Amino acid sequence: MSRSGVVRWTGVLGLAAILAQILAAIVASVAGSAPPVDDPVKFLTFARNSQLASTTVLMLFFIGFSLFIGFIAGLRAIAVAAAPEHEWLATTVFGAGVVLTVLGLVGNGLALAVVGIAASNHADAAQIRLLFETERLLGGAPWLVPSAFYLGAAGSLGAVTKILPRWLALAGWIGAVLVMAAAFSAYGASDPQAFWSVNGSVTFLAFLPFWVWTLGASVVLVRQGRTDARR
Picture 1 (cartoon, helix red, strand yellow):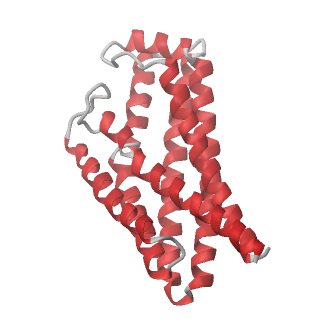
Picture 2: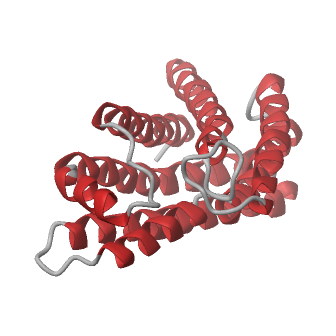
Picture 3: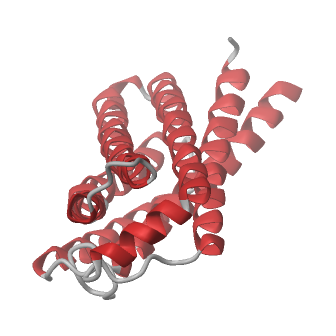
């Protein structure tokens, strides 16, 4: 494949990955928020009744994280071709992206187990609560710390290789600081209904810098690929 093709398809995969995740978030918000886990029976009823919406959300996240692998692989290839001396940094960004993907897939796998068990005839309310809180914990500091590292490294990669504009480097560095700050919510107790807790709302908001940077980089790469193809 030509360089312009690699650049364009890397951008397309990044766009598709983030749009799938954003669509999943929209579907989840339309489906409504879960009741407090302090009442396991009520939570089990919610999980059972929202099986279709929850499964759709999780499938979209599975697709999004899988497509993201193609984006980070393409980003590494573009960076290495542009600046071979910085291959170590390109590989670092790729490795951090793989870690994010694995954690995301594992967390969503646990959430799918919650939905599947809740819909079965052998559902246990306490077990459902344990799986749900564990899944939310994985979306906290265990995902946020590698995400901050990924954003910082990706911003630096764009800056030193010149494959991305300067504003994306700044966005990556600023995003890394914000996400790392959110990771300190790990010092809070387990309370999915709270804002600042180990699995609270702040961990969802911390996804925004990851989405914004990847979406911005993808748009830039798609445009670069089209420009290169015309030359």
